[in-house]
Length: 345
Image (cartoon, rainbow, N blue to C red):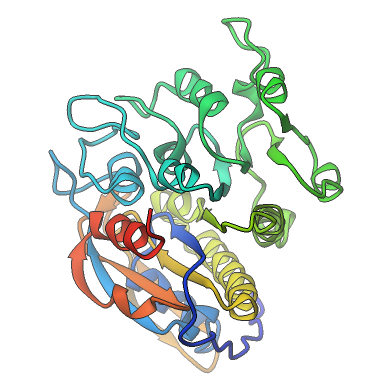
């Protein structure tokens, strides 16, 4: 069992314009994941500082139970697509994402994830393919994507490829720095960055510590140098993995890591005053149910009903200027619509 962590009260600024949006996706995170994590941390989460809560319908174009390809594409592009599709419509045509729309408005853009970059959620914002399993093809799209800052895993498909391409070299030719370690990334003060320190996924929380929070804040520091503002997507990627594995201990570790990252982002946004933070999920994983526990002891007893995804609605939490726009029950595509409207993209 994890030791509980302290949670502080964070109050956003009121009534200011929206210059930046930070979208945070907990892959596979439902209300039950959040409430179980809240119970395990003795009734405290940084997420509780949100100002508004809504519910998102996750079904995709051809299935009731979605995946991160179709679910993430709906959030990224505002269009429902077919199961396993990434960044394309039901006919396979490429779709513009929030990254593209923000870049076209002169804003800086970025993503930070704890998974391999060919995984569905980051790919939904930067890549286009009818098959999320076409991993070697998918990563080539990053060379021409509109993100100015990228952090994640998956280096093994960017170099020593069967087609002979060195994608890191191609990115450097387009003006990116390509740091391969945290220390190298930490020393970069400006410019475009494509950081892939790990061959596949990032390590487990016990080994990586607050890496997601650090990588996210580093990206924000770089992107915020643009006077026009920025859009950034941050994913707690591995909640989904441990939902699939029905591993409650690691699932709670990942959920708590994501919550602490939310706390770091809320704190930054509150000080900035012009940043909206939206936290949601692309779908639920594991069919998680909290069946017993003890709030004082942080004990939880949970059951899983599946090793796959379920079809429940997922929560949407908003913090900062414009937060009230995210109350209610709506399609997952509405998250895109709301962000696009609020940023005037």
